[in-house]
Figure (cartoon, rainbow, N blue to C red):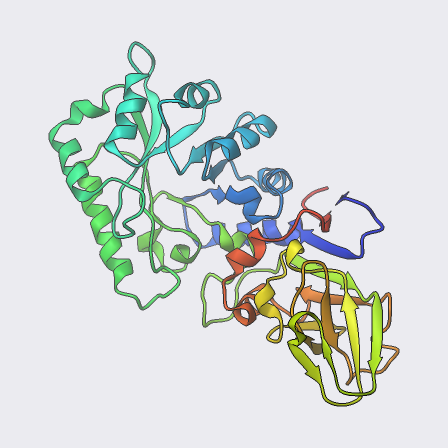
Length: 368
């Protein structure tokens, strides 16, 4: 399946078979725990509908998103699955949560009061309690957990279907904060109603059984990002970004390339131009730092990445290897997503979520 014109010169391929292999690998590491999937931000930029459809065919029945709009888009496509909403519920939107059977993650006592107020005279309203164990972002503080323990009536009419927290440093297995958060989470659970528990994100799954509890919530690892930095990536690559060379320029005297004269050619060179830029998600920081691949040969990105174009120094390649119409890899193939992110001074999450919608998208595999 493709999106946009077949005439496009830049193509993003999403391998849904690789995605589902990653899901099965993660499931194989968690024993009897459930494996949900985090599909916020349009499934990390790869297309929520296509990703969720493939995961459902592979047996996934629980999903998490960040916002109500994301949850509504998911529910429109998939009527029967568990959908948790990380950002919680507001007074203005509680009716939408209820009518569409969406489950808010309760992050404050105010959100709890909002949700409970709508439960009066009704069957209990399902909710997830989020306990902050060290991130200092969303979630109930230790003081709020203590207040709930002392005043359990605050939960009347609320069906706590899950208690969750979020690890701050799970991608560093040696970080002592991991164990401190796990212990704080275990203590908080003792003070709250008995319910299934969830702590591990993608990297948390690889910290071991003590972190798995009843449900894990992988996101990045599903999409091929390495959950164990510094070690070989156990996940399959899901994304490949390629573009065609549209022009090759022979430069036979000292000249500059691109905006700001940021790259100076000092001798005879060949510069190839490809039609992809920061409007397509190729970060501007890659100018002068990143690489592209033509076959197995790596060539430098020279000059600035502009909105629509990137220039490559292909001087060392035979003219037949770098000519108009030849496909160039920018992500995938010899260039892993994480290596591209490292060159740009960022993380794979940002690379994925910035991939532009004007790229021709091709979905392969996934039980199609």
